[in-house]
Length: 473
Ligand code: ADP
Ligand code: GLC
Image (cartoon, rainbow, N blue to C red; front, top):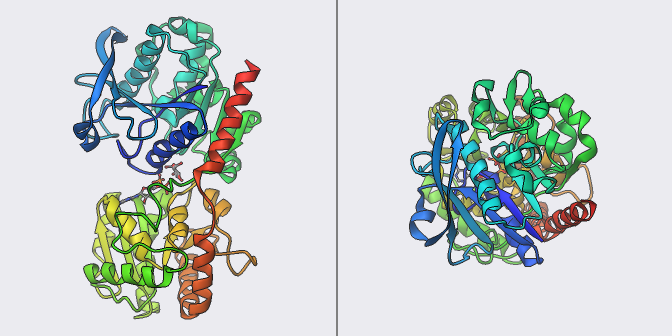
């Protein structure tokens, strides 16, 4: 069974958020279970591509409308990731350092998708399933079924995994001519509210769509940035599969990015030592509960309320708690956080730092996630594995993976209802109170570290899905 994963991100090649983590891990677990899973990414001029060797497996030529382009398919030669990695390189279009936010992003992702399909048909590669992640490869299910150019791929099953339905890959009909020849009677499938909408098209044309948690599958029908009706209509082919974590990367016993490794039995000593180091670096009082936020500073994550929450909690719970933030995103949020006076109870690191994130997961006592929308959320899963208690808004994947310790016997986290100052401050107060009960805190930490959110289980659910698709065509 050959499955092509198409994505904009894949850790450690290119990562902006959790999409990268998932596409860097799931295929590896699929390969371990006997699936020939390959990942095809756009090429990025980044550390990974500069320090690994690649061979050219195909040179092709195609068009974006009347503009011809040459592309190269590069294969990573050492198989270091545990699956075959291919990169589509287009000089002057797909050969740059950043993953997103170029003014010609639409052209980049359309050219990427066309190139993948051109390569597959030119070399007659047998693909059993195209597995598309988010809108960046969302036109593939349409092109496979309705473009005469790719006739030989018609009816190949397509899976769309929705990691985030806020971003949909919209573009105007003036760019329709970038697409190869398509069946004119099917162009309505590209349209949503007068625009070409790559995500909506993918939902309409894919064989099955999955979401990264069962909770998010339901939420999309109520809140999906104007696609609610579509998700209601297409729900017969939707499936929620919770993400896992890559235990080769996220394991307190072996993590080389943290100064002090630990296990469930040595968690007390291990976490204390990591906390001491981290607090010394950031000038924080290590005798107080350390609450962290790690993530993109955007509305979706509820990061806009953090400056107010921290300021009022620093006042209300003076000297009883410390906060450390690691994040980057909206300028106004970065500035508001940076404007909070640094003290032994507050510090912030504006930027992206993979190693620091590992050190914080290992050192912190609690992780705060006041997300407005959270399709799955990996932070709380990493936190649990590192014995850091999640304090989360009850939504999407957070609701599916965090059980409140005061609501249910088997609980291990803290949940709250709304992304507002009042609810978050109350949850922080609960965390401070919990921390004073050292026995209870230690018991919850151990319970959290013992939970199993590994990919092994979720990968099996994807395999069942692939098998079902294979037998139904
Ligand atoms: P999303 O993909 O929506 O950003 P997730 O919780 O799925 O949210 O995944 C976020 C991933 O990105 C986690 O691996 C988290 O540790 C990482 N991350 C986010 N912001 C930063 C940052 N500033 N520095 C380091 N890692 C970060
Ligand atoms: C998205 C979502 C996040 C999810 C990640 C990986 O970025 O915002 O909740 O964990 O994708 O699926």
